[in-house]
Image 1 (cartoon, rainbow, N blue to C red):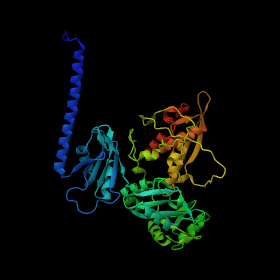
Image 2 (cartoon, one colour):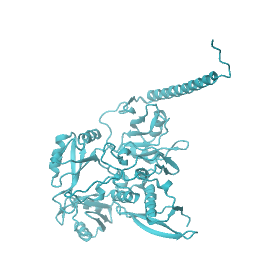
Image 3 (cartoon, rainbow, N blue to C red):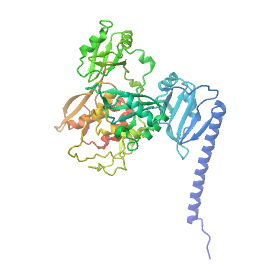
Image 4 (cartoon, rainbow, N blue to C red):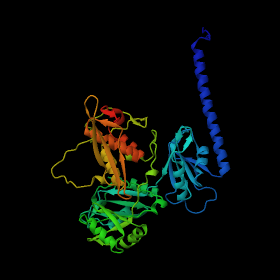
Length: 509
């Protein structure tokens, strides 16, 4: 015989949980219905179509009445830090302020929330630049700021470990044999021997899709041109500088110089077509920056000198691209990472069983502007036996990828080189603490060779060792120069400095 449950029984608790779950479910359904109605209203108002596939929802592309090909490269912007419950009905009106939207792609989760980022393509480059100018750091909701920067549809692959005796035509023909959509191959002569290449090349494809398919086809081990195992990766995107800024540039970038060529020789050669127009020359290894007093002379010299021979080397001359510090985001991703950041982080290959970790530091969290992010997978540091007879090839550290560097000092040096700046200069200062300890801090000087600007950076903490002070200064500088780069750098390191360094003292001097 079964007795009925009394009100004080567990049945009441079960009923309460069921009602709560039902209420939550109804709430989600109601919000979903409201969002669906808002999206339908948006489509009816604009006439744009909306399709969801492959983890993204595409609004437009093309818009109603569009004729001709899609907009050219440079018309798309990347939008980050989007609230997860925000959708096209709120985003489209905001981004329409900058111009006509050709296509908006919002990345979606299976749960129905967005993934925190989107791509917005405008009909012109000018509209995309305006969107960056007026919407980067825009407060899209109270206390919620979005980040907007240019989105580069990468069509270029980096091909490494190429035999140095191969010419451009040979590399181009080889790439065309096994991949489709090859437009051009960029090969740079060796700095010391111009008859050889530098062991790598850049292959340009007609579209991002063609480049992606080629990258998959050229995975090491599946294709060995000339009997060599090559390295394949995405090339670093080219810096994009707005036309207004480029119209003011009066500095020329000259590459493919001989190591022995002096600054005086370069200045004399560029002064030949019009004496006295060159202000000064700054040469670094096999490239140089030639500064002119007037822009019109720089433009004229570029057309005259490009392809000329100096000391037996055929030089390439272009306008130098100045550093556009305003285009870097002033706030961090708040834990969100761009879609391509997995490549930048340099995660170890888990399938490679030959790697052995020499040490496993404690799992720590990283704090950026007070925000905590989960610690990344550990970057394994491995050693391999150096057998007699193994061939060793001299290389430049700048030909390596970011994941080869395990310190912010090296990351900052690499970052300055990539931006055509002079190497960072470190100035050491000291003070004495109340208990008699010597405390140290570095001031970092960054000089932009292209526009001759100089900037100082100094962290607000003192350290007890020179190594820690230099590392902290490098991280502090990266955080100010390029927040996204600093975020990726901190994630790729094996220690979370801002949390783990107990020997740093607040800078009060």
